[in-house]
Picture 1 (cartoon, rainbow, N blue to C red):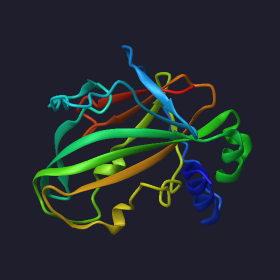
Picture 2: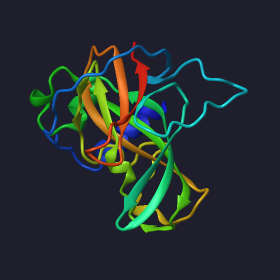
Picture 3: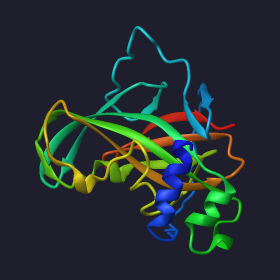
Picture 4: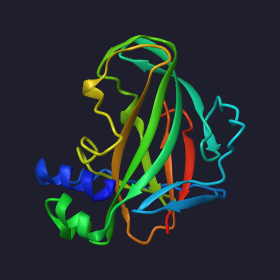
Amino acid sequence: MSKKKLWLRSAASAGVLALALTACGGSDDGDGAASTDKGGSVSGGKEKAEEQPEEEKGGGELAAGEKAASEFDEDGTKVTYEIVAQKVDVGTAADTEKLVSDPKKAAGLVPAVAHVEFTVKDGGPVADYPDAGREIQVYADGQRGTILIGASDDAPGCEKSTDVKDWKAGESHVFCDTYMVPEGAKELTVQWAPDRDTDPFVWKFENS
């Protein structure tokens, strides 16, 4: 059984999930290169095997596998995170029927799970319940998806922020968020920003 099927089954077993209807429009410019993994997972392409890209300090587009660095306020504790979007796992229309309470409201949409790794680079420690993972967003062909609350809690490779305690410099955790996106979307972007007034970092992935 594939990892994708495992996370879908785990999420469904916790109870049928409800859509948080918070989608809003948006647009992205520029092109990105990526490759599609087997099992409905899209991940960045053309990664440098020997040389890691330099970290970006401000918002904007990043190459596949490129890390960003940003300060973040964790409930009064200043932390500098190193952030990278690893991949997006894309589900099917059948998965949508299992995950949402009213499939009619999600007709034509499929779940897309963004996996983002955070490493405390400086500051902290973060005592508990880190908020950085809550800022993950997924866009499909320039439009923000609709968040599906709780669907990523049991996804393989994803961690619950409620389980993270005493997070020190040098330690990494992978947080995920699930968004409903159009089934035929060609380009997915994972976006993260420390606050609403800052331009987001943007990682692009192709979906095929």
